[in-house]
Image (cartoon, rainbow, N blue to C red; front, side, top):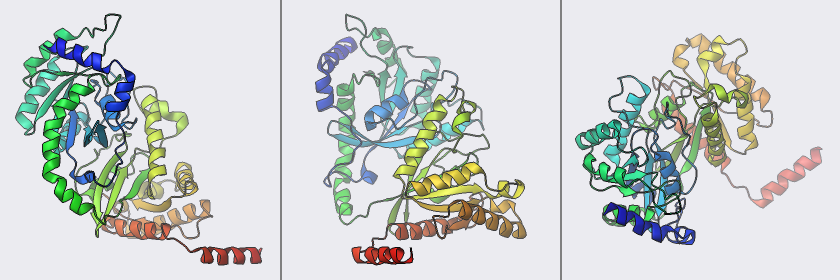
Length: 441
C-alpha cells in the first residue's frame, strides 16, 4: 500500500511545472482576508539530529532561513526557528526544532534544547515527526516516539524524509524502511523529500484536516483584529558572542525563547519572538554573536561552513530591522584596557550605513560598582560617538539582562528612537534645511 501511494505521488510530482504551480511554497505575505500570523496554526517539525528538519523547514517557508549542513557529530540547529509556511492553499506557522535527544545528560546543550522543544510542542497545533528513510528506523527514533507519546498532547504526523526517486526505474528503494516505520505507533509514514519536493501532495492531504479545523475556529477573531492593526516593529539585538543577547531577549519576551549558557557561539540561527508594548507589536530578533570573517573556522565543527551562514543571517537581520540594539559587555569594557573593541565600533558603523536606528546598550552592569558604572558608561559613549561622527547624539542605555535592572526601560527607549527614525518630514521643511546648509557652505 505504501509503495503504491508513493508511486502515485511520484507520477503527479514528476512534472516540475506542477510542483511550481500547485504546491510551490512562498514566504506567506498575502492579502488581508488571510489569517493574522498570531492566529495561524503552528506545526512543529521534530526528530532526531540530521533527518532533514531544517531542509523541510526551508522548503515550506520558500527560502533558506534555517541553517543546513551535514554534521554527523553535532547539531546545527540549537534554538528553534519559526517561519510562515505555505503549501498550496494551506498557510501556517512552522517551527524547526533542534534534534531531540530526550536521554541527554542534564545541563548539556541538547538537554536544554529538548526543554525548549517541549515548550514549543505545548504551544503547537500538530507535531510533524521526521525520520530518515535512507537510514531506516533507528533506536533514537524509537526512543523519541516513546517520548512523544508520553509528553505530546497534540496530534503527531509521521513523515519519512529523503525518499526521493533514484535511478531509471524511478524507485526510491526505501519501501522496507517505510513499512518498518509503522512500528513507531503513529500510523503509515508519508514518504517525502525535502530536497526535491516530492511527497508534498501527501503531506498537504495529511495536514489539511487538522489545520483547517484550527483556522475555522480562529478565523472570525483574526478578521476582527485585522482592521486597523499597525505593522510590527522589527528590533534586532546584535553584538559580539557572549554579551548576553539571548538573556536579554528572553527577559523582554518573558519566557525562555533562546537557549542561554556560558558556551561561546550557542546561538546560531536568528531567533524571532513577538512582544506587545503599549498596544504596539515588536518583533525581537536575537542574532548570533558577530564573528570575524577571517576566523570563522574556529566557531564550529564544520570548518566554518555553519558560521558563514550564521554571519550572513546576522547581516540579513540588520537589513530587515528598523532598530538595532547593539549590546556591549560593560564588564569587558571595564577590564579591557582598550575599552570597546574594534569589531563593535565597526558593527555600529555598519548599522548606521545601513540606515537603521542604532541604540547602544551596556549590559552586565550588575558586575560593576556605582563608580565603575559611571566610568564605563562614559567610556562606551565617548568611543562610539567618536567613531560615528555622522550621528549627532548616539543614544546609550545601561542595564543588566541577568537581574532585570534597567531592562524594563529598554523597549520604551527603543520605540522612542523608532518614532524619531520613522518621522516623516514635509518637502517644505527639507527644502528649508537644504537652503540653510547651502548658505553656510
